[in-house]
Length: 169
Image 1: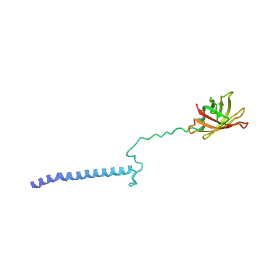
Image 2: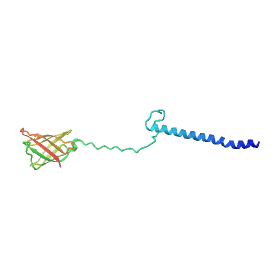
Image 3: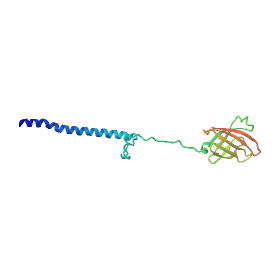
């Protein structure tokens, strides 16, 4: 009978250790499978479409701020002071620039000689401005892409014509 008790004592630890080991191995396998599934899902895999889509992502990244440069209207790009050159023959331009200033109310002032006021408009890269008095010279031109240089032609009320250009001060 003592032999039976000794055999029972020897067999008892294995009866407890083996089931615990099996449970631990199963837990490790479950964790490994869950990790593989999570990796596949994070890579955009459609293998497990039943997984909830609203679950938080495994890897979170800081949001990237997107800022766009303000778009300026053509009108605002024209405003300010310009050095103005002209030629009635389109070959010899004045050597000292006149000052041409465009205002937000679509008026301009030209300071050469006695000066003069007029009105202006812009559409895209094209400008059109005309003096309100005197020879009523009418200027039409186009800006470069940076809106810091413009050139064109002009005509007055006596059918005199010429060329002109201006650069931002």
